[in-house]
Figure (cartoon, rainbow, N blue to C red):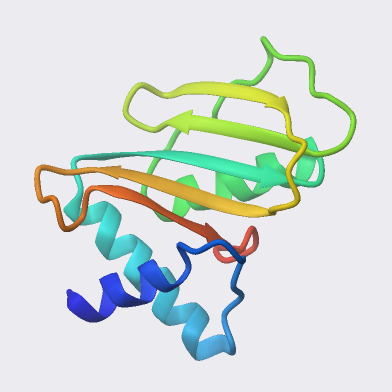
Length: 130
């Protein structure tokens, strides 16, 4: 548990971090799966260069976490350029907006009664579960 939290928190900093090699990518995948399995629920936020890239990353993360649904963004007009997509996995609600920031990646906000787990983690690579 401590090793997973240490790894996850190392990605939760001001500068985005990429896994050094395939072994660290696998460790990061396992840590995310463990964290979300221990939590009571999660929200995922994706900052991507465009809507197709963001939607693909979000669907890959949701599938890896065991969710069978695909978010419905049909109520939103995808903006040109960078986007922010957000999903509440338990409610299966979705949000889409323009994104002006420089970061690209996935944020995972975990809700848990365990204060050691509760919080936001990331940015994780968009293609981590590709």
